[in-house]
Image 1 (cartoon, rainbow, N blue to C red):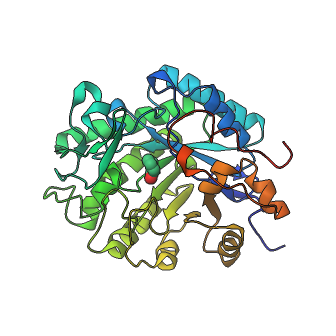
Image 2: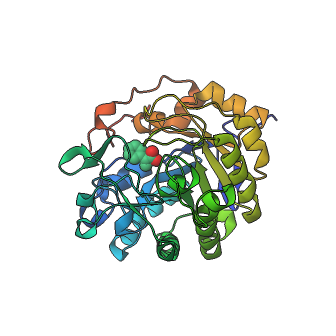
Length: 359
Ligand code: 8OZ
């Protein structure tokens, strides 16, 4: 039988009952101490019919935070909070990986320990505003990281991965997309370093490769995915030759035998026009499973799976508004509209009150 969105698949050692993945979605509704709370358990549990859930981007350390009310994955209390989520998803027969995140320059002193400056590959201020507890405020110029500080950041990924294992996750996804720290190293609009972490493709990809290596050593390559967004301009990102650097990265990631590569295949979050990019060529360079994301609907998702372009499709906004997206796709049932006013922050409204077909 021809495969489609409803056929099972295995990504590394993670077996999925279907190819419909819930994309990582920032929702800013964690509790005190960056600990997941009861409504977060309900939210993920409601969406457990996805073949795989990729959690919201999750800071790996206090310095990795860049928005209000994010859940972390570095304290015992956070692990206990996430454990309730993984248990609820597993009880419903779902699979869940946690997205490991360091925001780099996309932060603000008011969100960081002792009001320090955000860190980045180079001291380049992003255009735009930081989303803080006091509202939207101008970004600040970040502090350029010293080479001697990078191993501690790699160790923060290691610690977060150990916490993810303790919390019962099926794997981890390394967030190297959308203008956050690892992406800031990859693209030359934000990386103007002249040391071994800047300049050549190998140098700009070095931190991502070191992080991936370290995370793989802890949890195993068959439980690790990496997310890239070669041409997403969101967060004031650009690169002079995106195809060249991201083709290099796709090929370099082959050394690990990862569970999957996840690609944002264009611009998201209203960051503006994206540069041209050949995602078919990029995908072919990567020898493992491929997760595609960018406003796919059911028909385009099926077409991408059937053509072999993608193994699985990550759906974002449709999963916000449709906890039973898989069943709705199966029945060709109408989808609930998502209310963008309740995407980021707030209460249970617009979070766990979207109706299922039979509920
Ligand atoms: C939207 C708002 C805040 C964060 C990403 C984690 O784009 C995000 C994010 C998106 O990866």
